[in-house]
Amino acid sequence: MMKFMTATTLSALAAGLPVEAQERPSVAPKNMQVIAPALADYTDRVLYGDVWIRPDLTSRDRSLVTVSALIATGKTQQLAGHLNRALTNGVKPAEIAGAITHLAFYTGWPNAVTALNVVEEVFADGKIDLSTLAQPKGQRRSAAPSGPDHSADQNIAAIAPKLSQLTEDVIFEDLWRRSDLSLRDRSLVTIAALVANGEMEQLPVEVRRGMENGLTRPQIGETLTHLSFYAGLPRATEAAAVAGTAIAAESNSSKEASAERLVVVPSNVQEQLAPTSNFTGSVAVASRFNATGGSRLGGATVSFQPGARTHWHIHSRGQLLVVTKGEGWVQVESEPVRAVKAGDVIWTAPGVRHWHGATPSRAMTHVAIAETLEGESVHWLGPVSDSQYRAP
Image 1 (cartoon, helix red, strand yellow):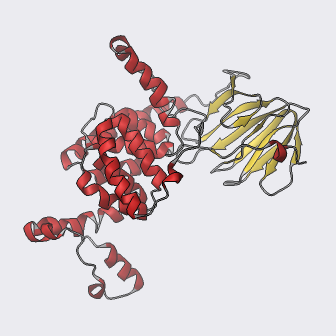
Image 2 (cartoon, one colour; image 1 turned 45 degrees about the horizontal axis):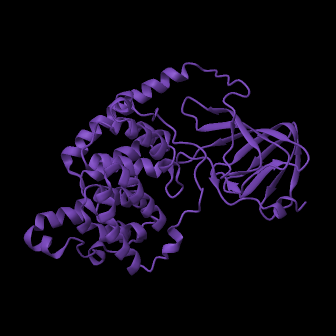
Image 3 (cartoon, helix red, strand yellow; image 1 turned 180 degrees about the horizontal axis):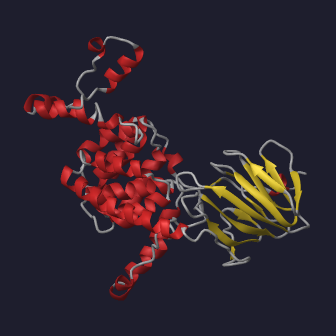
């Protein structure tokens, strides 16, 4: 039989200290210890002594899942304690606010509004600066969430056209683009809410989308295991069966797709103007591509007219640029601007703040290639001012 160990026990063993002397006090509520001592034992020994410290899902992610499940089901009595735990485990205040906004659409406005009362008290007690929760106007991701087709079902459009329009324009073209939560975290929050409320019909779509957004199979499985303690064993078991079927189907689909080992994306396919929220000047993006066979590479051809450039940004996995036409400039923060021309290849290391674009008098086109991390390849920052741009 498996023996469960508390977090303190594990720390004591790691430090070579006597376990008996390092045993922590019970985290179970006093009334639980008195009225239901067996439940208190399971709380200390299994939930917090084993599940919460399992390595397949970080404590930060477990807190996000738990808070989402509590908000989704209106269980605000336990919310304050878990919000404090979430902040301790690394969930940012802005991410909590983003999760509440997200859950308003997926579990209803009343749940979100009720949760705000508890969040307000926790933030006040923690002296959280509420001004940090405001998202800069226009700060959105440049692309909708990856994954399965998210267009509204035609049957929904036929009977409730406004609902169909809201689903497409507000949920996927606005909410999912907000930068207060990563795409991976939005998937995690959505899955937690669906399972907590027993809404299994939408779960396969969100599981597949979650994997496209960076969730791994072990993380999804561990999320469902964790939710068995906060949504109940029956719902978690049902969700595991549904998710297992969806993952198997996705795996088979990926194998079929990877059978086509060569994909050619023609030039200038689906050319679109780049969003002004992330670029300055006239910029066009075309021939977007995403690699198959499990690779996380993706990219596009980007054309800058004279004077146009990106905003400052970073890539979690780095970025490769291949200049195919014209002349341009590239700059890493605190370093001189460097000139590039057709035929040049530019590598920017992960996490480096930089920008790139055309010169004031010459246009420039490059192919941009980057790998995603947790469903995203780029984190946009502020614009490059005219004085910064013309500094060289």
